Length: 169
Image (cartoon, rainbow, N blue to C red):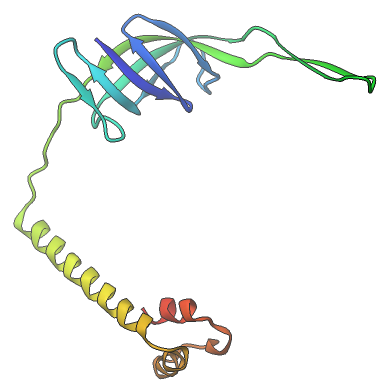
């Protein structure tokens, strides 16, 4: 069983009992950490691919130690100019050991009648607002300013058409 998990902006293919080096984590040595941004899980026979992540899946790990990676030499030179610069850099990293990969089966929430009714009402309200905005877009700036005066909106003389539509909706 393996999983592809995103840890501090990078993607790793991890298996149970595997040790990996990741960018430095702000967790003390010996503590446990869990990553819920799991992109894919393969369980030998079946695989779950997330859109963008697998819901309910989690990878647990233990922080072993914090250290620095190998030195990277940065050398810059411009020929015939007498310019040479040599710098080195060591990135701070954390060694972790994957302790467990949890698949977290899909759980569907059964909605009640009240929730379903409130969803349909909110959809109708959003459709009405969209129609209202479309109607406002078709009006001229002068007519939009007149509507804003009727509603009591202040500072309309310096507003542009988009601002007027936003204020009226």
